[in-house]
Every structure is written in structure tokens, then in C-alpha cells.
Image (cartoon, rainbow, N blue to C red; front, top):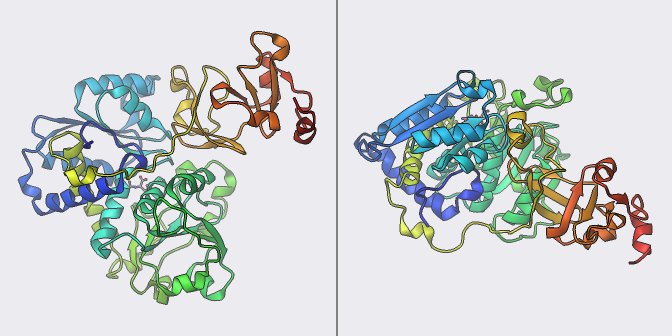
Length: 475
Ligand code: NCD
């Protein structure tokens, strides 16, 4: 299958082979930038940027102009009917009838998926809240590949706000696909979210280790609390039982990927408190460390205080080249998604996307995603979006929202097949009980609280509060 008519919403949508092919086409676009003006002639790209942007919007628009296509733009949510309460679905249907492709940036997590579900034309996610930003990742990978030749086996440190940084989230999955090792170096309190770590392990074959930076040498290089590592073999579990971080670092870090604190997404006051003192800075002094001798310093930009201006002239600093590569990479992507360029046959051979099939949980009423930034819980969207989850684990029972991918662990469950219309059989159980584990995924009903279960006419199981005694009772 080629890329034509497909959307790009998360890194799950592209295999490593497809990315390799995209990078080859990017090389061609970069070398012949001025000769591509008839590739997308007559095509229209709608660029909907409902959150601030400089690089992403302008590089997409430059790319489309260089391909000879046309651009219609919204760069401020306040001037659209969204400000009047219009839903994303309605906007997507309308814009989908005007343009050939949509590029969308929105503060809600999962917004790009909703636009893709309703637009009827290819959609590119240019950043949906703190969720993902796949085209920035393409730019990042292309840069690493250009500077280092191959991505496989590299040691890449991800630095700063790993909790809300959407570029980080997309990059983690992409690096895992290419088999790079990652050192997660979060500012304290801004660690990689659990749902991402869980997916990395379950679907991308990641082995994650927490290493305390207690050693002095390590502390000097990484003035941070915790570091994690993933293995270099993609799609299979590698064993890394005792990581010696000092030894790892002696080998050197190939790339340092720095990010700013995403203050606009902070939920709690503690995330903001003392941030300036806590947030790690990359400067001349840090880069003097032996482990950074050959390190390339990257940043998706914009920077705030975390990347000192005193390293701009250092040959290891490549963030402005990284930004410049946004144009040819987006030219290649637009040409492929619009079907204006053929997808090389080599890119489509063999299974390269990790394919884990999970049962789907979808009910008209009841549990909703508990992420306040998720598109599915916003007032304008909740009227038509049905909550939908994947059941990614039975023990502990964990649902993953299909929109924002946050994990949710319900407390109570019931089954649709035991009550057969009789009220006395409508029983709810604790989600960690022996009864709960016997419920088939297609019969599962989940409740946020006992009150909710009771409001739906369910009665407590014999020992709903005590998993142990409930197990003892047998059938
Ligand atoms: C990033 C973004 O918007 O997520 N910027 C970008 O697209 N180049 C990073 C950021 O805003 O910190």
C-alpha cells in the first residue's frame, strides 16, 4: 500500500521502511527545490493552525507553494466558527469539501484523529495538544540520519519536558522503530507518561530500566533524577538486566534532544513551582563533558531558557539546520499523500508496523476519558463522539482512549451476559477481582465508581470491596 490518500496522525501510521523511502524522496526534494513547481499544481492544502506556530505552519505552506499547489489558511481559532461553538467534525466536513489535504494543529489531544475521521480527505497532524507531532519527528529523524548516517544503535538523550512534549512522544516511538537506545532525562516532575512507557514495552519491544543517577560522574553529565534506557533491537524484547549507566555514557551520547517546558499544558501548580531552578539547561559547560564530545545538539524550537545562546556557534549545535529541513521533508510528504508522487515499491515490502490487536470498548453511556485535555471530553465534541477505548491489559484492567491514548484503570466492572434482563443478576465487581477477569472483552461494562454502577441498576457483588474473599466464594 502506498501513502496516497492516507492520513498521518501518529507514528503508528508509518513503518520504518516507509520513513526511509520518505527520506530518500526528501533528499531529492532538497536537491531540486526550485524544479518541483508542477508536482502539486491544482491541489489545495488547507492549513488549520488553531494554536501558535511559526516553523510548522510556514514550512508546510512553503512546501506546498514549492510544489506548485495552493494554500488556504486559518492561523487563529478566534476567527473561525469554532469560536461560536462549532464542532471539529462539522469544520472537518466543510473544509474537506474545499481542499485536497488538511494540515491541522489543535490544543486538544486527539483532535487530529477526529478531523481525519470526518474530513474524507488526507489529514496531517501538525501537533494535537501534548499528544503527538509526527512531522516534527520526521524532520528530527531525517536530521539524525543526515548527521550520523544511520539511526540504528545510536544513543539518544531526550531532555527536558518529557511529559507534555508532543515532539518527544512521537520521537520515542520512531526511535524505537529504528532501534535506537534512548536515555530519558526529564526535568523532575516532567517524566514520560506511563501510557507511553507501557506502549513502548508492549508494542515496540522496549525494555525500560530506571537508573538512579547517584554516581558522581553520571550526576555531572546528567544533573537529573532518573534515566531510562530502551534496547537497540526493534520489535523484540532485549534483555538489559543491569545497565551500567557510567559505562553506557563512556561510549558517548550521539544526540541530545532538548525541549522547552510546555507551560501552556501544565495541569498542576506544582509543575510550575520552582521550574526555573529545576529545569536542566544545556550550555557550554555541560557540553564540555567527555560523553558529549561528538554529540549533536537538537531542539524542535522555540527555545526559552533551556538552551543557552552561547552554544549557537558550536559545530555540534544543529537546531537551525533541523528547522530548515522542515521544508523538503514536508514537500515529500505532501507529494506522497496527495498521490502526486509514486511511493517506491521497496518501502511497502514486509510487515514493519508493530501490529497488536486489542479488543475495543465502546458504549453509548458510562465511562469517559479522564484526561481533561482529550478531545472526546470537550463540550462541543462530547455530543457526537462516543467514548472509545482499547482494552490494552486485563491485569490490571487498563483501557486506552483511542483519541488521546491516555490509559484509564476503571475500579468497577460488570458483564452484559449474566443478567439476561433480570435485575437480580445485574451485579458489579471490583475490576481487580477474580470475577472481573472472567468477563469476555465483548461483554465488559466498566464503571468509574460504585455510585455510577448503582445508578445504572447494578448491585454490589457479594464482596465487592474485598478481592480476596470474593475469590474464596467460588461460583
Ligand atoms: C514544537 C511544538 O509545537 O510542539 N515546535 C515545533 O513544532 N517546531 C515544540 C514546542 O513548541 O516546544
